Each structure stands twice: as structure tokens, then as C-alpha cells.
Image (cartoon, rainbow, N blue to C red; front, top):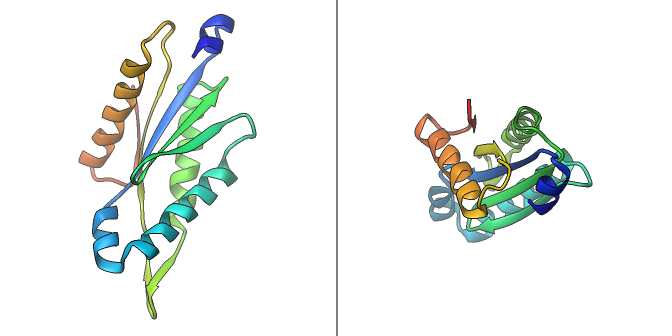
Length: 141
């Protein structure tokens, strides 16, 4: 955020949350749930540039910082992550394939914006995506 302010460069934040993950864990167990988290991490890694920063935010949420990236370009990255992860097949029970989806909220940092306000804004967009049917990217208009 300091660099974005200092050099007047865009910065976009993505918040990802696995859809229906509690149900997945309750149905198939936490070991299988850990595989889902690990595979999402691998998909995210494949879809990002070396200058991007991703981490597990808590539970089944991940956060991604995209420096020098506008909201529009961030939406392209978010959509790539969403579609690539949707292709992943999990087999928690022999003979049963399961697909897990992710909802993503994203927004571009506003100059001098408070960090908590920025994160809250993106968090609200992610929850809006969940309310609108899950398995989607939700960005500010």
C-alpha cells in the first residue's frame, strides 16, 4: 500500500473463499479437506506472476495482492483462478468425483485508503458473490 501510494501504481486485492467447504469437510473429513486447500494453493500459484503475493487468510479463505494491477486486470486473474480450480476433480470416496468451487471478491486500492477499509470492501464483494449464487468473481462496478 505504501508503494502504491508513493509511486501512484495500482494495487488490487482478491479474497477467495471455498464454497460449501464446511459441508465438504463434514461429509468427507478434514484430511480430504486439506487436499482441497492444498490443490487450491497449487492452482493459485500457477495463475500468478512472481511479483504477486498469495497466502491463506484463515480457514478456507485466501488473499492475493496483485501489485501494479488494475481492478480490470485483477478480474482476469481472478476468473482464471476460478475456472482452473473448477476443473480440479477430487475423489474423496472411491468411484465418486467431486468438484469444489470458489467465490472471489476483488477491488483496487484507493489512494490513502485505510487497510481495514480496503480489506472490508473486498470481503463484502466476496460475500456478495456468495449471495448471488457462489462460484463467481465479484468486483466493484
